[in-house]
Image 1: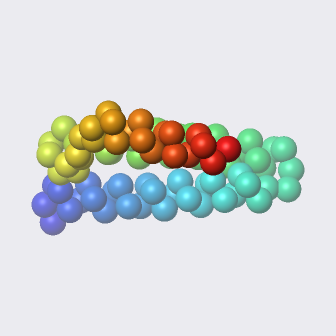
Image 2: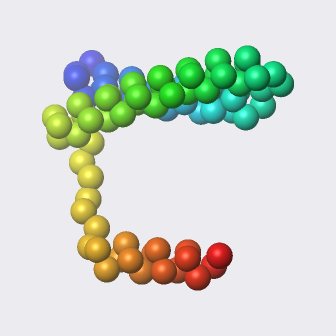
Length: 82
């Protein structure tokens, strides 16, 4: 397994953990359980971001730039819905 595949697998696993921790926090029945899941979720998001940043730096996760006018158009669309 090459580095790209390994990092892709790590990122997918970490995204899965984020999903589980988020739902655990949402569905928790007590404040202590909620705080435990929330803390784990925050840590997992941080790890996911580190993996993503390393993948981007190595060219394993290419991103596209978007023109500012397209961003503004989407903002206007959703602001008008409120």
